[in-house]
Length: 83
Image (cartoon, rainbow, N blue to C red; front, side, top):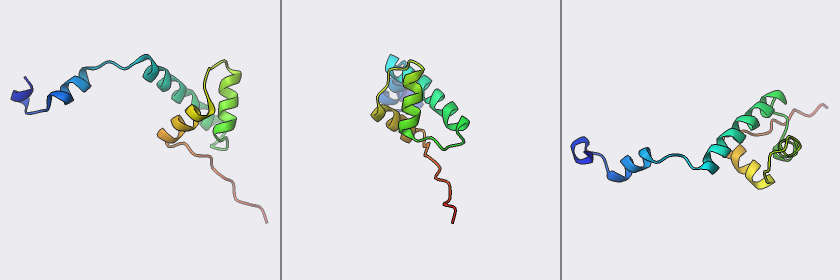
């Protein structure tokens, strides 16, 4: 079938593969990170979001929070200094 469609077999099998439980968990956590990020108007960084997730009972490390935020391109917005 792959030869008929002229696609590599690896493409077919990577498409067919189901997401692992860890990937599913990361998607759920990323959705929650997005909610917190929007609620804070982008003012919370990874440490604060990590603290809020832990207080909600999510078992997550700071490094994992940072990695998921970087992958989703969420960055803390630094307000301009008042002079």
